[in-house]
Amino acid sequence: MAILGPFLLGVLFLSELFVLGAFGYWGFHMVSGFSKYVLCLVAPLLVAIFWGMLLSPKASIPIPISLRTLLQLTVFAAGAFALYTSGHSKSALIFFLIASIDLLLIRFFRL
Image 1 (cartoon, rainbow, N blue to C red):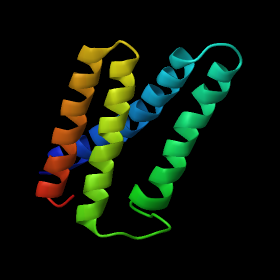
Image 2 (image 1 turned 30 degrees about the horizontal axis):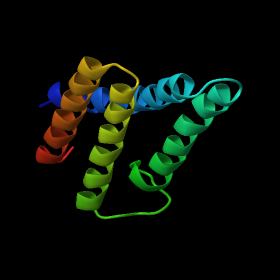
Image 3 (image 1 turned 120 degrees about the horizontal axis):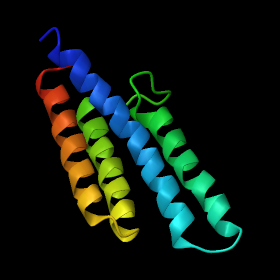
């Protein structure tokens, strides 16, 4: 458990970064013109604000762990859907599987 805990938490952190990148990629490729640059920055920013306020360990709005887990899975699913709609279906599936299994293992081991 001494190695597994930090590994799982590291994968969760990378999943959080990846979901921000997925929303940025989606924003850049879903619209054209100047708005793609705006959406590329605004979409991940909104997700980061939502994550920081509700889902981070030191969130400003505390919520029960079960609701936090459900919302985290929802954000990961939305990020995977953003990748899927951008034409990266295999990457979306792999990302969602890794992120969701990792999160569920973290909750199972109470990390």
